[in-house]
Image (cartoon, rainbow, N blue to C red; front, side, top):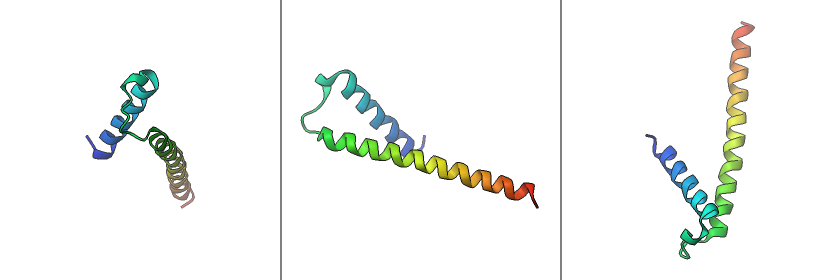
Length: 66
């Protein structure tokens, strides 16, 4: 499995535990910063996926008209 994917799955699971079972939230973690980083990553992933979709559509359009 890809390192980025493993990290993403781990971070998602940590946030899920934090939201569903807050007693497991470690006081050693800066949760505000963690959640802000998670929101930033989610936003950037959404934008990246939209850009990749546009690039794919542009490539398809180019092959249709040549």
